Image (cartoon, rainbow, N blue to C red; front, side, top):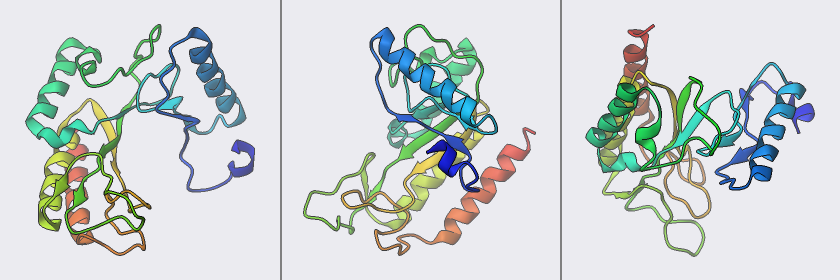
Length: 207
């Protein structure tokens, strides 16, 4: 796969595993070996060993955090504690960021999954209950307000280097996209644009 897609312009990083929970030394060593092999195959790109948590050797420490829907004050407080203690231990009540035997080595931190909010009037295209990861919101206006609050809180946290909302569009059973399954906007994209403009302004002040 790496050799096949090496020249594809949209690939910015390789992520061989997602949300694995390695318990044995053999499992952790396997993830490390795949990370190293990927780096040897393509030394020009970043490699994330195991997206979400239980990181071993990795270029980016990415975290899946769906708890932000509870409120930005809780989110800010959690990351303030991270800055105060100088490590990721305050996050352990939510997620085990590093696998046992591995330490955080000042890699960039990215919230690579958050949100997962559905809008009440939308339903899956298959016969199943709606699936989402955060909560169901009343309408697109509540969605935009929630997205703005959370994204700006992430942008204002100097420890965090990037974020990715879950998700761009709905899939068969999940209704938490900006767009529907057939790629129609649920929300005004210009509002998303304005929020991200503000993110750029916040981050540029730290550069």
